[in-house]
Length: 370
Image (cartoon, rainbow, N blue to C red; front, side, top):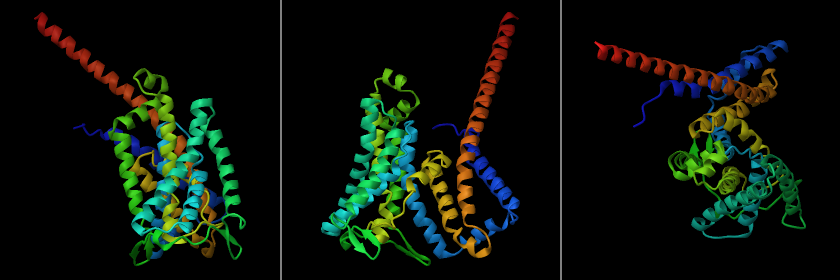
């Protein structure tokens, strides 16, 4: 059993805590400068979160955020910056919707098939960036940004009426999916929670087990820390880079399924966009830990959904967006400050231990001399 390190836990919690405090303080200053109350908007948002229908919306939104953030976190643990999660998830959702609209199997086959289609599509799209990086040295940041734009164009072309698109009013969609691919949710007093919240929980557990308790996870983290050191210990660094991108893309591919299979049952112009970029901030705030990401996803979803009523109370709902942006900035600064303090504290502890050992050795010599 590992000895519980209280100081290490406090250091892990200090970064997010400082980031939240700084973000709230700066947002309050912005409100104060604009002549508004620096406290009332938070009171309104907390009040909104007490309503059961808003709670359901927060949980559903957090489910999608969580899956996308774990996809980003896999890349971060490998020291890869997968900015292409947004394109991967949208392309996977569109492909899954197309397959679901044109293939009809029994439900026990249809649902696994759709999940597999989403994972393969996301992995394929992320794998392009992985191959470019491992074979040509192309930065995954540049490659995934370009692939986001290409994914948008591919989706627009495939959903044209002359291809696979179905017009529903002014909305170009992929057409309704067969009901055998629908996933029922869990009924709560405020509405229906997406059934694929179960998948999000399983993904979190698998992420923790694989990266923290397996040889593959160790190799992946070791390669992210130092490719040369990992290679010296027999790890194929290029293979690990490609595997990390494939896994990240596969997880990104299923991040749109909760709403696709649980609510919209089609892909169209109104399908949520920007999920991948939001996931970057959530993964950073959650420190790439499955539990931390869960809390960060809930916080982000709360800011999104509970701020809708601000417009009717004399405040702009963009206050929540400002706070989200400030959280991302504060996270980077606070984590670096905590890291520096942690290194300094570690050096102090090592110095104290060496001094104690030296005193003990000196006392032993004195005793022996007597």
